[in-house]
Length: 227
Image (tube, rainbow, N blue to C red; front, side, top):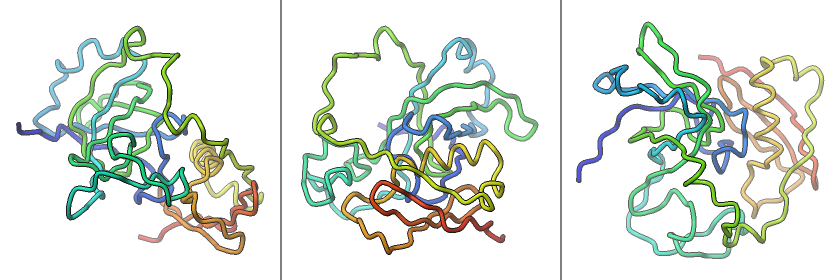
């Protein structure tokens, strides 16, 4: 079977580090789905505006491995416990496909790209390829009594985020709100816990640096990346 790339996503995460671990965890994380020219027919979107959410099938473009591994080490298990690859959402899998449910905020017509989808709850790197989208159906896709495997046993990782006043106004309101959501969900690997270590990642056009001590994350710098 040949799988075709129908478009790609524009997000605020140019690198893997810092991107939310699951879709919907950071509800303010926005994305724009831009269709490749071959798939820009407005007819293909007729009726989509009636749905509040969509499934997005996309590619882990940075997930590279030499050979198949039947087990992986999920970061949320501390990085030293293995589970089966098919019992995880690891990007390192036989076909590096991601599956995310995102809120559909609107369909916009642009001069350069035709119609694009405005989405939120994104957990993808910038420029991730998209292979398909399908509407989310609450009556079929929502199963409240479902069990979550090892994730049901994990503790709450929410951190208190402190950003000095002189840094808060570096970002727009929407970017600031998204950044706080990303940080409070602790972007660090679970097996690293060094209060003296300065962590850093790229977010939109900024480099964010922070430290974590116990349950408090403190941002130490927000610097605009010079092009």
